[in-house]
Image (cartoon, rainbow, N blue to C red; front, top):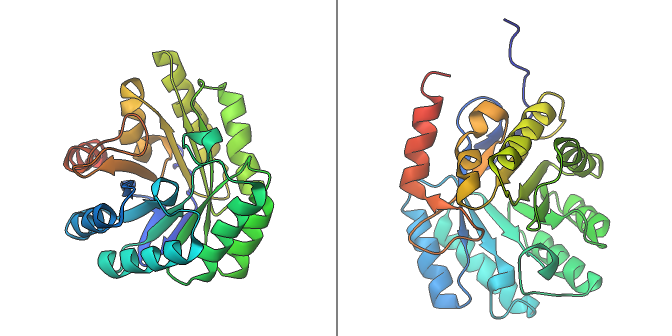
Length: 258
């Protein structure tokens, strides 16, 4: 039997994304109001989560960059050394926020310049994606290039092409989430992950959303996804996210004999 391909690794605050071992677990903060945001951050700080994501597009003051910077700094203080992923999802990819290209770029650039975030999500199909990546690079903030397809599941070849395109545009991690209509769709996502993981220059995060795709959120160690998302007593940021304790138990079980 030939050895498994060596998977690329990104180190962030001592957390290894990619390579061998179980996928890391990310908890999103999705509350709109500051008390709820800080309460969620405190729960995450007391949990076994590996990383925290702030969905700033859910924040009631998302267009006030001064308040966003202040809130980001407070989250940073609460979660301590856990890596903080800054994510501003737009209307085209599962949010109700519809900024201009310049507005999207400016929010991303200001966050990267703040010195308080460890990773930034950039929607690779956004017209401002290249400028966002340039801003992240200038501030040495690793980029999670992302694509969320709520309409369905592309072919295995198309999923692979999208992940490779993200890597080619300068991403440090390539992420895709798709919506399955059948078990065949879930299999297509997993097959694309496995194929891409054999040659990708960057770590991958992939998932099939909704209840049908739950298996994809738990099988990253087998197929090549380096992280998954879970909930901690709150609503998740995407369909199909499961409670943290359940996810950790399943990841430990699946990876036990690998």
